[in-house]
Amino acid sequence: MSAQATAYTMAEKLSAPPRRIRLGIVGGAGGFIGPVHALAARMDNRYELVAGALSSRPDVSKEAGKAWFLPPDRVYGDYREMARAEAGRPDGIEAVAITTPNHLHYDAAKAFLDAGIHVICDKPLTTTLDDALLLVEQARRTGLCFFVTHGFAAYPMIREARARVADGRLGTVRLVHVEFVMDWLTDPIDLMGDRHAAWRTDPATSGAGGAIADIGTHAYHLARFVSGQEVTGLSAALHTMVPGRRLDDNGHLLLEFENGAKGTMIVTQVAPGNECGLRIRVYGDKAGLEWRQDDADHLRFSEQGKPVQIIGRGEAGLSADAQRMTRVPRGHPEGYLEAFANIYSEIAAALWGKISGTAVPHPVACATVEDGAIGIAFIEAALRSSRQRGEWVDPRLPSVDGSKP
Ligand SMILES: NC(=O)c1ccc[n+]([C@@H]2O[C@H](COP(=O)([O-])OP(=O)(O)OC[C@H]3O[C@@H](n4cnc5c(N)ncnc54)[C@H](O)[C@@H]3O)[C@@H](O)[C@H]2O)c1
Image (cartoon, rainbow, N blue to C red; front, side, top):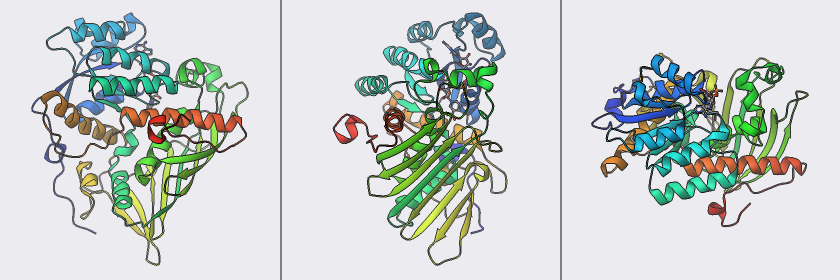
């Protein structure tokens, strides 16, 4: 494969709304992912960021609002006040991005749904399955859009991997191996004042899961997304390797999928020398594939009995979905920020469809509130299994299998 795809700008490939969607943000001041949301939303010119509650501290929110060039009267000290005020404005926000620590996701999402505003929320959706199911119910009842930002699923070569599984090129999927291997919590930085680490290892702000929630939900979503299979059983061993830490920082899981495929998951934040080692391998009875975030532009594709192929982003012949997610020609790296922008641009099409009452002209594969709830059911199942020394449990949602796990 050598010829290149010809269309490079998102505008040529993903339908754009006829005007920018008015977006607000909760969180962001001094945070990691809030600014990523703000950047990603604007990369393809489909949103204008017009309001925010950027911190739990009103003074910090106001200061940050100035630096973000938000209109001063639309920088709020409290997200509930923001939801009420924006809902009352003729030019109020149409969607909100929720980028706070986990324990605030439910309350913030509910406040904006109550106000009739579409929601884009970071993962994990909530800290309990009960709350997650309430958000599913509220989103369905109100008809509002609700997306969860699993950005890794919008890398072009992840879309290519998904397309190759879906079109049968792998044959029947037999094995799914996913891992998210990091080192940043190897030292007890959470106990030494690192605030990003501190809230992630505190049950009051992270929820009952540590690594299993923080990166396990991403790995779980990716496994489901690429394989096209729901997980029907899991056995988990979760560990806390750093003395004094209150939540898990390492986990080993066995997975069973609805078609009988078997899999494994490794999640760890205590493996020295690993930055953001997200990798997925899927093997069917005809072929297999492997993708790694540290070589995100390439997909290893191996047909049984044939030479292994390294497929590059931007090459000719890739799936329509992979092409839609591609911005620049092959050889120019695309990465995390572009993948995050891909979800924002895909979501814009769904939002505009809802706002204008028109059909969405292409598939929107971004994670929904249901996927978010499936992630929370996964966390609770993994914790339950680990407490029972690896007993097999069913991680599915009540609505998926008809019975509460
Ligand atoms: N999708 C991804 O790839 C990804 C990556 C990192 C983090 N996350 C998720 O994003 C969320 C935030 O993570 P982070 O790493 O940015 O955390 P962070 O600690 O870096 O930032 C948290 C932000 O929330 C703000 N905040 C806290 N309380 C608030 C309140 N009451 N009102 C308004 N703002 C408030 C803080 O001011 C800060 O800006 C978490 O749920 C995390 O799991 C997702």
